[in-house]
Length: 352
Image 1 (tube, helix red, strand yellow):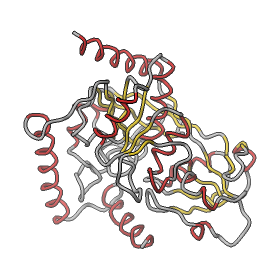
Image 2 (tube, helix red, strand yellow):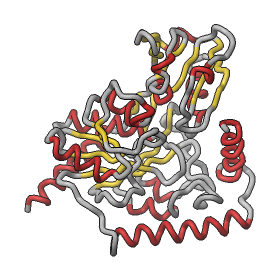
Image 3 (cartoon, helix red, strand yellow):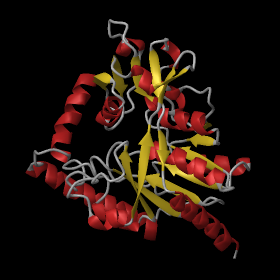
Image 4 (cartoon, helix red, strand yellow):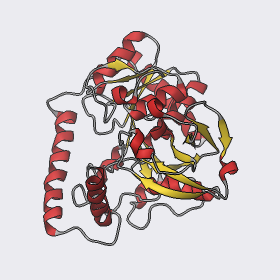
């Protein structure tokens, strides 16, 4: 099944991000999907069903494309930035790919299979209250009632319209951009590209590229670039899954390693390792893949380096050869200042 999914993803991505134009059938399906997405948003904004509000400001973090764009490292950076500015953030998420479909608090001891890989990673990295539920409003109410938070971040919450949001942050992958600007299935967009105009902030994820790198290619809307802030990702060490021992990535320079990535754009992780002088044997898996020990049985004794999001799914069979590679996101302080100011303005407005 993994091989089939990988083949389908590659077939689609050649049309979404590559040099193969989508055919007429895909474009026709896209037009239907785009109309349905626009109609759904209009219904929530102006009719029934209504959005539901909780008693604290809500920041929705999301992207327009299928798959990841850097939402999780940005969410962690927002948590740390808001906390440093005197706020008490919490995070709500659907918990994509988990084997249960209930409401629960996420603890650092939880299983990724029960709470989702990204919520577990956020809880372990930040220590802030995190809750998952099929509906983010229910998770938001749980954290609001706890009294532990005064602002909520809805991770991957841009298209989850049930939860009323006060601030929207759009994240864009600076390497792949918005692809061919078509809505699925002809392109990678979840909603038409104009949806980005309604977002309060736009964050361009440049990964570990130099700040001067030209983002996204010609298809990326100039209006979004003009008002975007950049996010840089930095990976400096590898953490042994069984012992927690931290080793500088520089220690692996010149070595061959097995590189494992079950993220939307595995090549970003492989390129990061190459930038540190490491020679990765690339093992891409579908996004959110649920790992079993056999997936990492490569028949040799080379080190295994994997993304931090994948590492949290390997607790049960971790060995001393397996290492997670944490990524730290850096965004401009002025952006975090502006965000915190908007949060406090929302609170003040609600009191008047």
